[in-house]
Image (cartoon, rainbow, N blue to C red; front, top):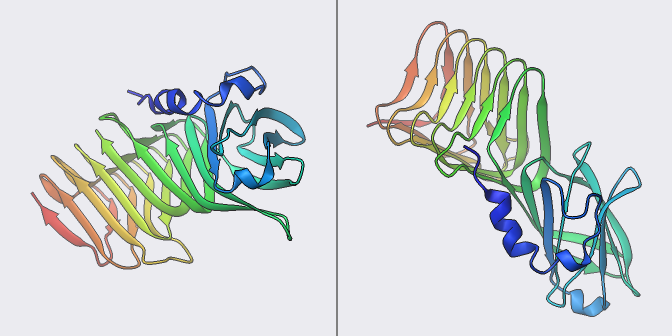
Length: 278
């Protein structure tokens, strides 16, 4: 069951941006990019444009409070933000976006030299389900990744699909099942800082020939990991699957039944994690 994450944030966000929004398809789309410019008053009326390969996906005016939001569709997942006023004109390329998500940016505009500074980058993602050979590869060291499934399944991958997030922090919560990979799918979750996977049933499920990796990035900053299941297993692995947990610092894995359930030829490496059974 998909959480109505985008709808809820749209009601709040688009209340102040729809009058100025003229993106392709009007207000249609499944990606919302919104933000607040902390010093917008210094630059007068500011226009924000989202571009992809020099094609305009959306455009809006920044409100008097510094807020903006644009709803759009992306074909490649990478867009450019352009900010224009009578005294400021600059672009910020390489903004990664994912379908069924909201990106929220806290921004400061700077003159001499002209810069668009992103002070905070948050991503609010709807549940993810990939099949066959589809993939999501999201790499952004500033991004704080959040997925609240509202009691549904959080992340699912099957076939030869790949889901990879390498970000600042990861918070996957309120899941029925947290992370499930099966057949030959791979799910890789890496963060500089904290990773939390919290579910009612199994927090991590790996079956068949699947791979699940949860751990630190190549440049961690006090990376910690919490994997917890309220009523089932922290990690449930079977078949020839592989689960690798690689924290930099503190790590805990807990399950309402057991922290680990390993069957068949499955391989589970929990490194230095503390294991707690229910």
